[in-house]
Length: 330
Image 1: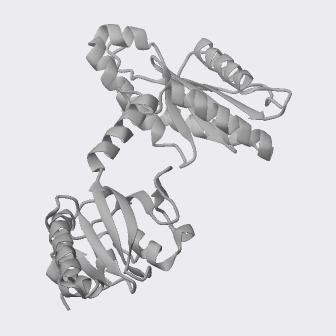
Image 2: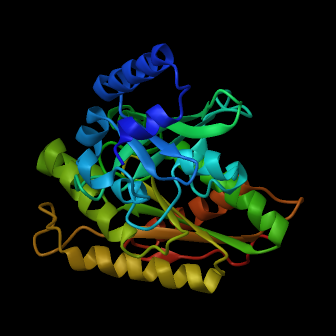
Image 3: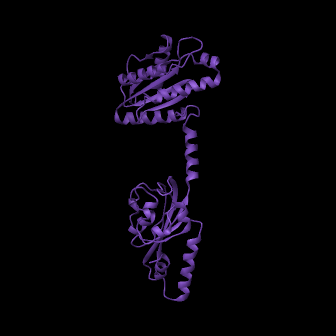
């Protein structure tokens, strides 16, 4: 059964209404907006040309089937139209609703879709609305789509600019401050240790003067990669400022933090970035570590101060080493 015939059967038998419906179908078919229509059993009644272009799936393959989900997802998932038909708006899975655009009759959402046929993920905004017959019964659901991938990628890029260091790609100081506050709050709630490493490139000013700013930038990028390579999934490494990096280690004891610090120190040394001021020597880092058991009697700023003091001791003791506080902050 063709989509045109199916839609016509939803209409009153009068020729005028039938003609109006045929015109509506033709209009939807030629609109630049991707549109598809499902009947009450989720079979595809209409799949317009714009939908063909968006998904790479021709209408002849999809009309009369329930396989429309394959155009959007690798694994079976309901589209917004399916959810409206099944009256399962609460089961929207990973689809994120757009505030203010949904009511009892309509559903709106935005979601990343796999788009298997075209071979690239797209970020789509979808709106689904019911179609009723002349007796007020649900006859079909129409879903319209908008490709918002460019807008979403631009948004992500702006968010990264706000939280990422432009040179190294690490978290920036703002992101560090926000994450430290969040991890401190969590450590306080769960009574878990929170460790912090302050990592500083030894004699970097002299290195920068000898190698120029481009050489200094390349050195910082290599060290940033080395430090990040030692992180767990829930750790955070940030460019704290200049040639200094900070590492947040949630639920990590002082002993564990010291082990991470030593791995970082060794990995940077193994980079063998040449130091022109001292032939035969290489760029190194000094690291200060601190650990706190968060409580109402201490603060995240005290943790930073203790780690900074430990870093100063490492520098004073001859550099290329780690330094620990005498006691944990508790």
